[in-house]
Image 1 (cartoon, rainbow, N blue to C red):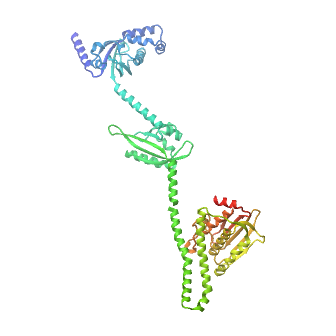
Image 2: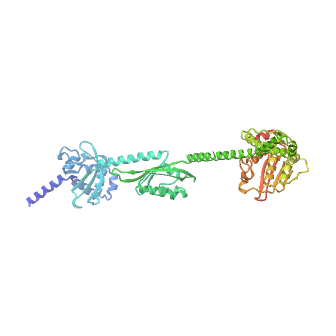
Image 3: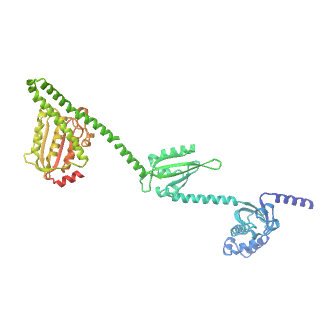
Length: 540
């Protein structure tokens, strides 16, 4: 038997010392005796008792004897040889080790046979090492021996600590960054949102993580944004998208969300890291710039269209005027006196009409230039409204008879006098009457005047083609007209100049129209207009 036991012991030592894992054996006899004494003295809750007697843990640790260690333990504890480790356990103790021994005492007290925990030891050279300890005793009845397996996890702990520190630095940086940052896992679920996201959206971590961030995206943008993100996640490629993000006050703000994929050391896909930037202010500037640019494509278009129309309109009276002059010149050169005298009255009438038209066109252009440059000036004087309208109507009588468009005037019998600019008021009446004769040709045109407590008014009504409802609000703008210039001509400036003149005198102009049933333009002006009032209205 003795030989067999010796062979078994030899085999045990070979395995014990040959193991790559740190192994050692401890004698717990003295500690067991101390615990038995405590139990015999009536202690039932060792955990509470140790809280009241913290010094007992160190006293018990000093009674533990290291019986044996293997070569791996000698190397781990940086000992010169095995005998330097065997003996008192307290040589490798640091304060953190005391907490582990505290747990070991509770295992013995409660009858446990195995305990695994992390702790810190000190090598014989004074270097601290992180270890994972597995403590085992043969059975509840055998309490004098404890076998320990120890694994050095210093490098792993250092790596973990570095990672935690790096993550802490990232979170600190992200939480103080001027943009919102986020991180996802490989499935696309959001793992992290920076503090600025929560401050902006008002979401909590519970609401925002996973795919909850999509709840803060505008309902019209949410599905599209989610689809773009998941498609990029499947391809593992960078992406960028715009969406409206709800701020905690309920306002939706435009944001740019962009991200790049993350890959591990071995190329494995880890997810995304991305940022969200509020671009509402920038987008508003861009949209305003686009509107301005569009207003300029539009202004240029209107300018070109106006120049084309103006060229045509200016040439229109010049052509018959030139023809009449050529005809008269030929008759004079041929000394056809009787023929010349016979046709002279009608030709002069045509030429006068064309010169008048040409003068009106040039006058409109000049007025627009003055108005645009803020140089329109008023010469106020007492003006009899009824008399002025009668004079203007008389000048149009020839055209009215020629086109079969009679003018019916129903002027207030009471003399209505106001402080107005005669030329500008006359121009307003002329423009409105000219339009009525043109668009209501062949039907009567009606002129009326009147007076209220504060205003004088006059209206011009025709029974012509009327104005489409969508054109009523724009016909007083520059270069605007309710119908094509190809059919009715004109520069599209008459009503614009008229409104500017009326407003400069403190008045208003409006129109009522039914398509196909004519239009009624009504001008209202204060009966007393001071020069200062007119200047102020024009400046505004």
